[in-house]
Length: 239
Image (cartoon, rainbow, N blue to C red; front, side, top):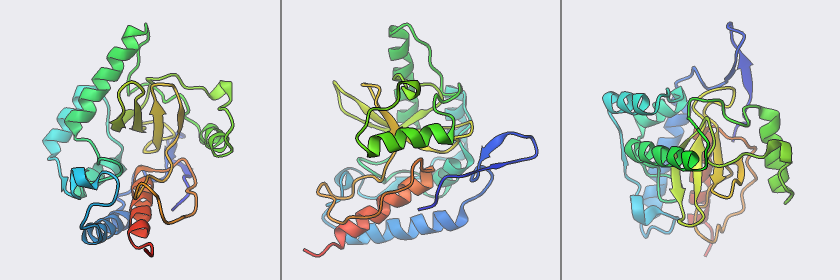
């Protein structure tokens, strides 16, 4: 899995290295591995596969534009390319939410913030909008240490949108950062204000195959590919 790096463009702003690409190679790899996993996992052993059955639905351009207008953001080009070529549905855990589900959950999170006398928006800067900060948070979690207080992120947070969520009393989400220097990166956040760059998602519940740790923070397609790699390795693991 590639390491998240940055490049500077003529405007002097720092941008994600994938912001202007079409990711043809990466999308082709995702399609191939998703097709392989669907063929291998006929009994839906992978977490959430019994919910999405490896089916994805491609939204039309109008649906994407309506969504962006509703929550006042522009989706990262990489995620737009993914939706255009593969779509929502099949994915880690119970699958990727529809744009309507993302919008509804974002509205819920904004209401929760208002109840706590706070105001959040996905078009405001993400609190950890710096690669060094992100790596410090990731390293703290990997070493079972407490996140430094200077990097504490209160939930709900600015500058991100939920792609998936679970739980009731204690909720957790997978978030996508739509803008800034961390554009396209994937984060795990919870109602307990536990925030860290998203790691490789579960394949089977037992996670039979031991794969190398991924270098966080991941771009969306890197995170999705890391799930496919884990899921395929778990299914192929010797009985």
